[in-house]
Amino acid sequence: MREEGMKKEGQYVVFRLGDENYGIDVNHVREIITMQKITEVPGTREFIEGVINLRGYVIPVFNLRKKFSLPEREVTRATRIVVVEVEGEAVGIIGDEVYEVLRLAREEIERPSPSIVAGIDSEYIKGIAKLERGLVILLDLERVLQREGRSSLESTA
Image 1 (spheres, rainbow, N blue to C red):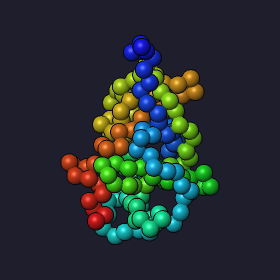
Image 2: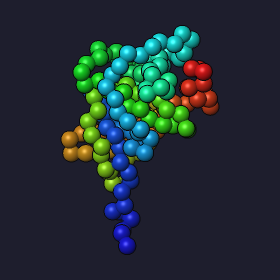
Image 3: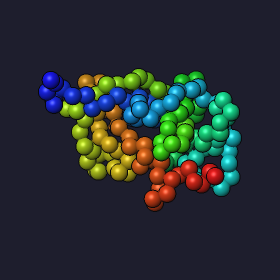
Image 4: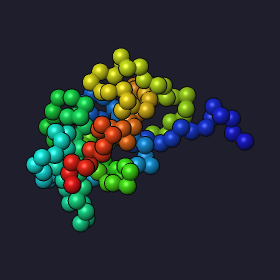
């Protein structure tokens, strides 16, 4: 039987926004696609870029830069849309670049201090992974995509 300290916390898809690395639970990730044309939808929340047609399904696309009040950045060849499933809904999240899938042990993850995560509400963060090459902010997608007890997706319907 394994010791508790050796138990794996989970796997995370790591992507970059600006100078920071963010991780989302791999169990939420459906696929990672290249950036494509996004159709704007009037009347949606400011952090919803619009929608894409992904093999016949209309998927809302979120801009976490806007959600986290980060400066805008030009789309490059490395820009990706990470298609995730949250509460039974598929949504896209724009990342500047997707790096890898990380397997993290429990001892590599620390609870965030509200004072260390500038620009991002600490309720959106599951933890901070401490790696030799730097830190990865682990996002709680359910909370990131929720607002005031209502889904952010309700505005796109």
